[in-house]
Image (cartoon, rainbow, N blue to C red; front, side, top):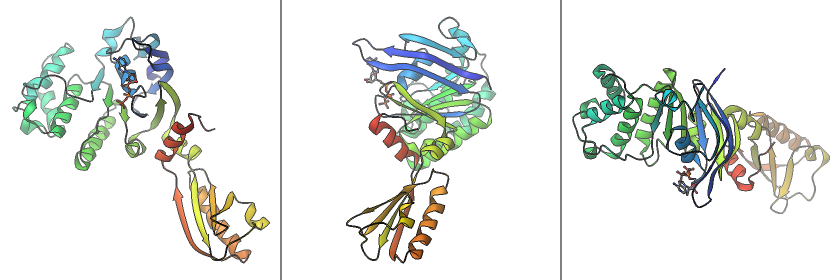
Length: 313
Ligand SMILES: Nc1ncnc2c1ncn2[C@@H]1O[C@H](COP(=O)(O)OP(=O)(O)OP(=O)(O)O)[C@@H](O)[C@H]1O
Protein backbone atom coordinates (compact mmCIF):
# COMPACT_ATOMS: atom_id res chain seq x y z
CA UNK A 1 0.00 0.00 0.00
CA UNK A 2 1.19 3.54 -0.75
CA UNK A 3 2.67 5.34 2.22
CA UNK A 4 0.70 8.33 3.44
CA UNK A 5 3.81 9.81 5.00
CA UNK A 6 7.38 9.28 3.99
CA UNK A 7 10.47 10.66 5.71
CA UNK A 8 13.83 10.23 4.03
CA UNK A 9 17.12 11.06 5.70
CA UNK A 10 15.39 13.55 7.98
CA UNK A 11 17.75 15.40 10.32
CA UNK A 12 17.33 18.36 12.61
CA UNK A 13 20.18 20.17 14.27
CA UNK A 14 18.97 22.87 16.63
CA UNK A 15 20.86 26.10 17.06
CA UNK A 16 23.62 25.28 19.48
CA UNK A 17 24.40 22.04 17.68
CA UNK A 18 22.02 19.55 19.29
CA UNK A 19 21.08 16.85 16.81
CA UNK A 20 17.45 16.11 17.68
CA UNK A 21 16.82 13.99 14.56
CA UNK A 22 19.54 11.96 12.97
CA UNK A 23 18.91 10.68 9.45
CA UNK A 24 15.44 9.30 10.06
CA UNK A 25 13.75 7.16 7.39
CA UNK A 26 10.14 6.28 8.04
CA UNK A 27 7.16 5.28 6.00
CA UNK A 28 3.64 5.30 7.46
CA UNK A 29 0.77 3.48 5.75
CA UNK A 30 -2.77 4.60 5.28
CA UNK A 31 -5.12 3.66 8.10
CA UNK A 32 -2.56 2.40 10.59
CA UNK A 33 -1.90 3.45 14.15
CA UNK A 34 1.80 4.04 14.48
CA UNK A 35 3.26 4.54 17.95
CA UNK A 36 6.52 6.39 18.35
CA UNK A 37 8.19 5.35 21.58
CA UNK A 38 11.16 7.01 23.14
CA UNK A 39 12.43 8.49 26.39
CA UNK A 40 12.37 12.22 27.20
CA UNK A 41 14.30 14.23 24.69
CA UNK A 42 14.46 11.40 22.14
CA UNK A 43 13.20 13.61 19.29
CA UNK A 44 9.54 12.63 19.10
CA UNK A 45 8.11 16.13 19.28
CA UNK A 46 10.74 17.39 16.87
CA UNK A 47 9.73 14.74 14.34
CA UNK A 48 6.07 15.68 14.66
CA UNK A 49 6.97 19.36 14.45
CA UNK A 50 8.89 18.77 11.23
CA UNK A 51 5.87 17.14 9.57
CA UNK A 52 3.46 19.74 10.93
CA UNK A 53 5.53 22.70 9.77
CA UNK A 54 6.61 23.85 13.23
CA UNK A 55 10.24 22.77 12.93
CA UNK A 56 12.38 23.36 9.87
CA UNK A 57 14.36 20.25 9.00
CA UNK A 58 18.12 20.69 8.55
CA UNK A 59 18.21 18.06 5.82
CA UNK A 60 16.17 15.26 4.32
CA UNK A 61 12.72 15.18 2.76
CA UNK A 62 9.15 14.74 3.95
CA UNK A 63 6.38 13.62 1.62
CA UNK A 64 2.79 13.55 2.85
CA UNK A 65 0.00 12.33 0.57
CA UNK A 66 2.54 12.40 -2.22
CA UNK A 67 3.30 16.10 -1.75
CA UNK A 68 6.82 17.25 -0.98
CA UNK A 69 6.37 19.41 2.10
CA UNK A 70 9.28 21.64 1.16
CA UNK A 71 7.53 22.79 -2.03
CA UNK A 72 3.88 21.81 -1.68
CA UNK A 73 3.25 22.47 1.94
CA UNK A 74 -0.29 23.88 1.79
CA UNK A 75 -1.87 20.95 -0.03
CA UNK A 76 -0.58 18.45 2.45
CA UNK A 77 -1.09 20.60 5.55
CA UNK A 78 -4.86 20.75 5.16
CA UNK A 79 -5.00 16.97 5.52
CA UNK A 80 -2.85 16.81 8.66
CA UNK A 81 -4.11 17.36 12.19
CA UNK A 82 -2.05 17.86 15.32
CA UNK A 83 -3.03 17.38 18.93
CA UNK A 84 -0.14 19.04 20.77
CA UNK A 85 0.95 18.21 24.29
CA UNK A 86 -0.35 21.45 25.71
CA UNK A 87 -3.03 24.01 25.07
CA UNK A 88 -1.33 27.22 24.09
CA UNK A 89 -4.09 29.57 22.94
CA UNK A 90 -7.82 30.10 23.05
CA UNK A 91 -8.10 29.92 26.83
CA UNK A 92 -10.69 32.71 26.88
CA UNK A 93 -12.71 31.34 23.98
CA UNK A 94 -15.86 29.27 24.36
CA UNK A 95 -15.33 25.66 23.27
CA UNK A 96 -17.51 25.63 20.16
CA UNK A 97 -16.09 28.89 18.86
CA UNK A 98 -12.50 27.69 19.29
CA UNK A 99 -13.21 24.47 17.43
CA UNK A 100 -15.06 26.22 14.57
CA UNK A 101 -12.23 28.71 14.32
CA UNK A 102 -9.70 25.88 13.90
CA UNK A 103 -11.75 24.63 10.97
CA UNK A 104 -11.79 28.09 9.42
CA UNK A 105 -8.01 28.33 9.64
CA UNK A 106 -7.85 25.68 6.95
CA UNK A 107 -10.16 27.62 4.67
CA UNK A 108 -13.10 25.26 5.16
CA UNK A 109 -16.64 26.65 5.21
CA UNK A 110 -18.33 26.71 8.62
CA UNK A 111 -20.25 23.51 9.28
CA UNK A 112 -22.17 23.55 12.55
CA UNK A 113 -23.41 20.04 12.10
CA UNK A 114 -19.91 18.69 11.69
CA UNK A 115 -18.67 20.62 14.73
CA UNK A 116 -21.63 19.35 16.75
CA UNK A 117 -20.80 15.80 15.73
CA UNK A 118 -17.18 16.21 16.82
CA UNK A 119 -18.10 17.82 20.14
CA UNK A 120 -20.68 15.15 20.88
CA UNK A 121 -18.27 12.34 20.08
CA UNK A 122 -15.84 13.83 22.59
CA UNK A 123 -18.57 14.43 25.20
CA UNK A 124 -18.01 18.16 24.95
CA UNK A 125 -21.35 19.24 23.53
CA UNK A 126 -22.78 20.18 26.92
CA UNK A 127 -19.71 22.35 27.50
CA UNK A 128 -19.78 24.08 24.13
CA UNK A 129 -20.58 27.51 25.58
CA UNK A 130 -17.98 27.43 28.34
CA UNK A 131 -14.63 29.16 28.21
CA UNK A 132 -11.83 26.66 27.79
CA UNK A 133 -10.04 27.97 30.88
CA UNK A 134 -13.00 26.91 33.01
CA UNK A 135 -12.77 23.26 31.94
CA UNK A 136 -10.98 20.44 33.74
CA UNK A 137 -7.60 19.25 32.45
CA UNK A 138 -9.14 16.20 30.80
CA UNK A 139 -11.78 18.28 29.03
CA UNK A 140 -9.12 20.72 27.82
CA UNK A 141 -7.30 17.79 26.31
CA UNK A 142 -10.45 16.72 24.50
CA UNK A 143 -10.85 20.27 23.20
CA UNK A 144 -7.37 19.92 21.67
CA UNK A 145 -8.53 16.78 19.89
CA UNK A 146 -11.74 18.49 18.73
CA UNK A 147 -9.69 21.38 17.33
CA UNK A 148 -7.41 18.97 15.49
CA UNK A 149 -10.40 17.10 14.03
CA UNK A 150 -12.28 20.24 12.99
CA UNK A 151 -10.79 20.28 9.50
CA UNK A 152 -11.33 16.55 9.03
CA UNK A 153 -7.70 15.48 8.67
CA UNK A 154 -6.70 12.14 7.17
CA UNK A 155 -3.48 12.00 9.16
CA UNK A 156 -3.57 12.84 12.84
CA UNK A 157 -0.64 13.33 15.19
CA UNK A 158 -1.28 12.86 18.87
CA UNK A 159 1.63 14.01 20.99
CA UNK A 160 1.35 12.25 24.37
CA UNK A 161 -2.46 12.19 24.27
CA UNK A 162 -2.82 10.58 27.66
CA UNK A 163 0.08 12.12 29.61
CA UNK A 164 -1.04 12.93 33.11
CA UNK A 165 -4.68 11.97 32.65
CA UNK A 166 -6.52 9.58 34.93
CA UNK A 167 -7.28 5.98 34.09
CA UNK A 168 -10.92 6.66 33.24
CA UNK A 169 -10.09 9.42 30.80
CA UNK A 170 -7.25 7.42 29.31
CA UNK A 171 -9.71 4.68 28.44
CA UNK A 172 -11.98 7.33 26.93
CA UNK A 173 -9.06 8.54 24.79
CA UNK A 174 -8.39 5.04 23.56
CA UNK A 175 -12.04 4.72 22.55
CA UNK A 176 -11.81 8.01 20.66
CA UNK A 177 -8.65 6.90 18.88
CA UNK A 178 -10.34 3.63 17.96
CA UNK A 179 -13.30 5.49 16.51
CA UNK A 180 -11.00 7.65 14.39
CA UNK A 181 -9.18 4.60 13.13
CA UNK A 182 -12.53 3.06 12.16
CA UNK A 183 -13.19 6.17 10.07
CA UNK A 184 -9.95 5.54 8.19
CA UNK A 185 -7.82 8.23 9.83
CA UNK A 186 -4.13 7.37 9.99
CA UNK A 187 -2.81 8.03 13.48
CA UNK A 188 0.71 8.65 14.70
CA UNK A 189 0.99 8.90 18.44
CA UNK A 190 3.83 9.41 20.82
CA UNK A 191 3.64 7.98 24.26
CA UNK A 192 5.61 7.17 27.36
CA UNK A 193 3.08 4.52 28.29
CA UNK A 194 4.36 1.43 26.66
CA UNK A 195 1.30 -0.58 27.55
CA UNK A 196 -0.64 1.98 25.54
CA UNK A 197 1.42 1.27 22.44
CA UNK A 198 1.15 -2.43 23.17
CA UNK A 199 -2.61 -2.16 23.17
CA UNK A 200 -3.34 0.35 20.41
CA UNK A 201 -0.62 0.32 17.81
CA UNK A 202 -0.30 -1.69 14.63
CA UNK A 203 3.35 -0.72 14.33
CA UNK A 204 5.86 0.67 16.74
CA UNK A 205 8.93 2.81 16.15
CA UNK A 206 11.57 3.19 18.84
CA UNK A 207 13.52 6.43 18.81
CA UNK A 208 16.43 7.47 21.01
CA UNK A 209 18.83 10.39 20.69
CA UNK A 210 17.28 11.31 17.35
CA UNK A 211 17.88 7.91 15.80
CA UNK A 212 15.07 5.59 14.83
CA UNK A 213 16.40 2.36 16.29
CA UNK A 214 13.70 0.07 15.06
CA UNK A 215 10.37 0.03 13.26
CA UNK A 216 8.26 -3.07 13.19
CA UNK A 217 4.78 -4.55 13.37
CA UNK A 218 4.02 -4.69 17.07
CA UNK A 219 3.15 -8.39 16.94
CA UNK A 220 6.28 -9.20 14.95
CA UNK A 221 8.41 -7.20 17.39
CA UNK A 222 6.94 -9.06 20.32
CA UNK A 223 7.42 -12.39 18.56
CA UNK A 224 10.97 -11.60 17.49
CA UNK A 225 12.24 -10.05 20.68
CA UNK A 226 9.85 -11.46 23.25
CA UNK A 227 11.06 -14.11 25.65
CA UNK A 228 9.71 -16.43 28.29
CA UNK A 229 11.49 -16.51 31.58
CA UNK A 230 10.92 -19.23 34.18
CA UNK A 231 12.41 -19.69 37.63
CA UNK A 232 12.17 -23.24 38.81
CA UNK A 233 12.95 -23.67 42.50
CA UNK A 234 14.52 -27.07 43.05
CA UNK A 235 13.88 -29.26 46.10
CA UNK A 236 17.60 -30.08 46.40
CA UNK A 237 20.52 -27.99 45.08
CA UNK A 238 22.15 -29.31 41.92
CA UNK A 239 25.90 -29.11 41.25
CA UNK A 240 25.70 -29.79 37.52
CA UNK A 241 23.02 -30.17 34.89
CA UNK A 242 22.27 -33.65 33.55
CA UNK A 243 22.59 -33.72 29.72
CA UNK A 244 18.84 -34.12 29.28
CA UNK A 245 18.29 -30.82 31.09
CA UNK A 246 21.33 -29.06 29.65
CA UNK A 247 19.81 -29.18 26.15
CA UNK A 248 17.32 -26.49 27.27
CA UNK A 249 18.33 -22.82 27.53
CA UNK A 250 18.78 -23.00 31.29
CA UNK A 251 21.28 -21.97 33.94
CA UNK A 252 21.70 -22.88 37.56
CA UNK A 253 21.54 -19.98 39.99
CA UNK A 254 21.43 -19.21 43.69
CA UNK A 255 23.86 -21.96 44.63
CA UNK A 256 22.18 -24.50 42.38
CA UNK A 257 18.76 -24.14 44.00
CA UNK A 258 17.12 -22.26 41.11
CA UNK A 259 17.01 -23.34 37.51
CA UNK A 260 16.50 -20.34 35.31
CA UNK A 261 15.02 -20.81 31.84
CA UNK A 262 15.22 -18.02 29.24
CA UNK A 263 13.89 -18.86 25.81
CA UNK A 264 10.96 -18.90 23.46
CA UNK A 265 10.07 -16.10 21.10
CA UNK A 266 7.09 -14.23 22.45
CA UNK A 267 4.54 -16.42 20.66
CA UNK A 268 3.96 -18.83 23.55
CA UNK A 269 6.61 -21.24 22.32
CA UNK A 270 8.56 -20.67 25.54
CA UNK A 271 5.68 -21.81 27.72
CA UNK A 272 5.45 -25.08 25.82
CA UNK A 273 9.18 -25.55 26.21
CA UNK A 274 8.98 -24.92 29.97
CA UNK A 275 6.32 -27.64 30.17
CA UNK A 276 8.69 -29.97 28.34
CA UNK A 277 11.51 -28.99 30.69
CA UNK A 278 9.45 -29.87 33.77
CA UNK A 279 8.72 -33.29 32.27
CA UNK A 280 12.44 -33.78 31.63
CA UNK A 281 13.18 -32.79 35.26
CA UNK A 282 10.76 -35.41 36.54
CA UNK A 283 12.26 -37.92 34.09
CA UNK A 284 15.73 -37.17 35.47
CA UNK A 285 14.49 -37.60 39.05
CA UNK A 286 14.91 -33.93 39.92
CA UNK A 287 12.22 -32.59 42.25
CA UNK A 288 11.09 -28.98 42.18
CA UNK A 289 8.94 -27.03 44.61
CA UNK A 290 7.86 -24.05 42.57
CA UNK A 291 7.74 -22.51 39.09
CA UNK A 292 7.38 -18.85 38.28
CA UNK A 293 6.89 -18.10 34.56
CA UNK A 294 6.76 -14.71 32.92
CA UNK A 295 6.39 -13.48 29.32
CA UNK A 296 8.37 -10.38 28.41
CA UNK A 297 6.32 -7.31 27.59
CA UNK A 298 6.93 -4.57 25.07
CA UNK A 299 8.31 -2.60 28.00
CA UNK A 300 11.07 -5.19 28.60
CA UNK A 301 11.91 -5.07 24.91
CA UNK A 302 11.97 -1.28 24.96
CA UNK A 303 14.20 -1.14 28.03
CA UNK A 304 16.67 -3.63 26.58
CA UNK A 305 16.72 -1.73 23.28
CA UNK A 306 17.50 1.55 24.97
CA UNK A 307 19.87 -0.08 27.41
CA UNK A 308 22.59 -0.96 24.95
CA UNK A 309 21.38 1.04 21.95
CA UNK A 310 21.80 -2.11 19.91
CA UNK A 311 19.02 -3.52 17.81
CA UNK A 312 18.69 -7.19 18.67
CA UNK A 313 18.43 -9.42 15.62
N1 LIG B 1 13.74 24.70 20.04
C1 LIG B 1 14.74 23.95 20.48
N2 LIG B 1 16.00 24.43 20.54
C2 LIG B 1 17.03 23.66 20.96
N3 LIG B 1 16.91 22.38 21.35
C3 LIG B 1 15.68 21.84 21.31
C4 LIG B 1 14.53 22.60 20.88
N4 LIG B 1 13.43 21.77 20.94
C5 LIG B 1 13.89 20.59 21.39
N5 LIG B 1 15.21 20.62 21.61
C6 LIG B 1 16.05 19.49 22.08
O1 LIG B 1 15.96 18.45 21.12
C7 LIG B 1 15.93 17.18 21.77
C8 LIG B 1 14.67 16.44 21.35
O2 LIG B 1 13.55 17.09 21.90
P1 LIG B 1 12.05 16.61 21.63
O3 LIG B 1 11.14 17.60 22.31
O4 LIG B 1 11.87 16.38 20.19
O5 LIG B 1 12.02 15.22 22.42
P2 LIG B 1 10.79 14.32 22.82
O6 LIG B 1 11.16 12.94 22.42
O7 LIG B 1 9.54 14.87 22.29
O8 LIG B 1 10.82 14.44 24.39
P3 LIG B 1 9.62 14.41 25.48
O9 LIG B 1 9.22 12.97 25.59
O10 LIG B 1 10.31 14.90 26.70
O11 LIG B 1 8.53 15.30 25.00
C9 LIG B 1 16.00 17.48 23.26
O12 LIG B 1 17.34 17.32 23.67
C10 LIG B 1 15.57 18.91 23.38
O13 LIG B 1 16.16 19.53 24.48
